[in-house]
Length: 257
Image 1 (tube, rainbow, N blue to C red):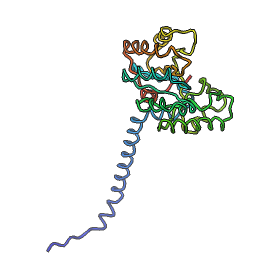
Image 2: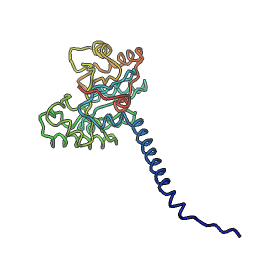
Image 3: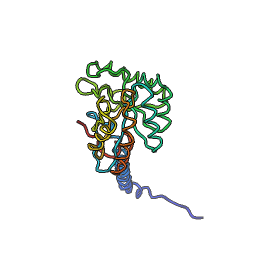
Image 4: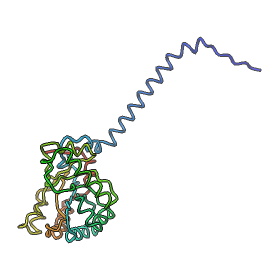
């Protein structure tokens, strides 16, 4: 029978070497994990580390986000959704809290057809004129209404009238988990003297990679449904891919004003 013996003296001599080996392995593993995290979450981190509202994204790829603000009515929203469904295009809709509850069929349709749900606030007031706690209250009220109407948790907001500068608007939004989104190309579909062709051409002559385009789906912008197909045809001809705002932010760094 063979009897195994252990030389404790030799093992004691090897312990420092083994400890050093384990330390190096741990450092290398941590470095790999950190590197992987940077590679896979750069776009998301850009949205979370917001210093100012985002107007577009820094990218050379022909990709952009088409967005719609919606505060009331169904006569414009429905044909817009019909066109987007027909072409299998997903956009970002900024819903006001009251509209989300008042027109539940539209709210649900926007969500069910795969569009990104975002917030346009609860009351259409100038956030710059409100104290921070009132801004947060407005955003949270809208959040609850939008969630109730669509079943979705919004995390992007476009302030009413795009008013975010000054005061504590950005800080208030970020503190309740929201990223503030503006636009770089305004379709000007809210101008009453613009026809569908003029609205479309205003978009197509200004569009660029990483763009965020502003359009409206409220009833006051009754030329938008006719302008939208012209815009989509032009963007397709130029080789642009339309994505949601959250998807766009993954293509590069958010650009602030």
